[in-house]
Image (cartoon, rainbow, N blue to C red; front, side):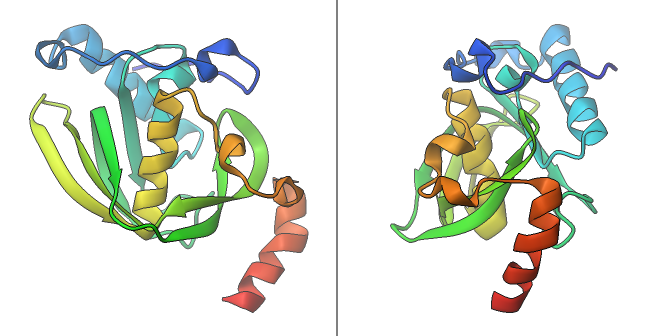
Length: 182
């Protein structure tokens, strides 16, 4: 396994649409190695998810996991999930603003509106079809990673850039406001 280099905002790969993966290629050794390396990289940097183009690979693959993540201490657990060729369909028009960060935009957070419930259709790590409903934080992570695969970063979705903040300032100023309003 290897820790891969994460592309940072400004690198052109983050603005490119990833290519769908042939279903027959999902179980190939090269793709499986990429998936393992993406999982290791996501865990190394305490990410909630990681899309392949964030590690300079234009393939429709993302990994998601939130288990005791220090960057998201209050987030519900999400078991490890590999998402290949995702199709995300909003199940409601309801949008909720929530704080997001990104490994490609290090040390920053901002409030991003996302659908509160989505349907995810994709292939899993074994190339089997997966069809599920995700809500709340899980839905947010799915939308964030799928956006990456389409060349979109969370900053593009922000309605109010005045909430964009360095993580140290977020901890000092915004975190207290969030706790007071919860």
